[in-house]
Length: 117
Image 1 (cartoon, one colour):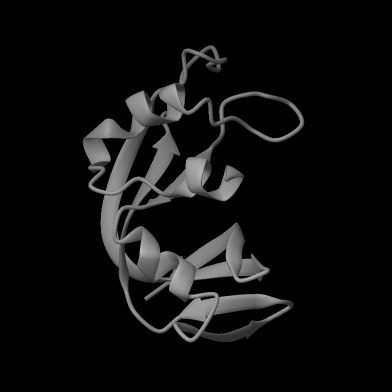
Image 2 (tube, rainbow, N blue to C red):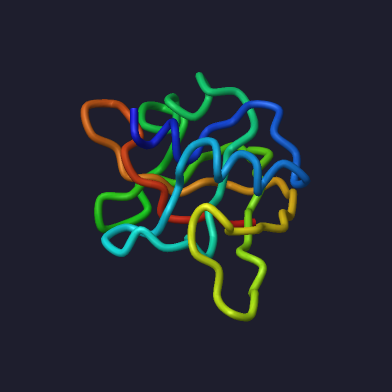
């Protein structure tokens, strides 16, 4: 469930980064500060789960890389002076299509490792 809250948002656009990051309360692990970058997979949720089955190939260290490209939005923290603290974190987004790299447990994605062209 944590993976889906943090990394899945069908139909999201780059302009929604700040609102989505705030609404989902996505923050840095441990410190609770503004997270510097977060990636959302904006395509088909069922296809993401399939990466953990026949839709992906081993990537090393327990990770799997998707065979197909997914639309994604990378949300980057906008640097502010003084540095922002939640809930005053502002983000800009970039949209692209990339292969996703995830760790799977029991056929479900549990950790987003990154993406690749």
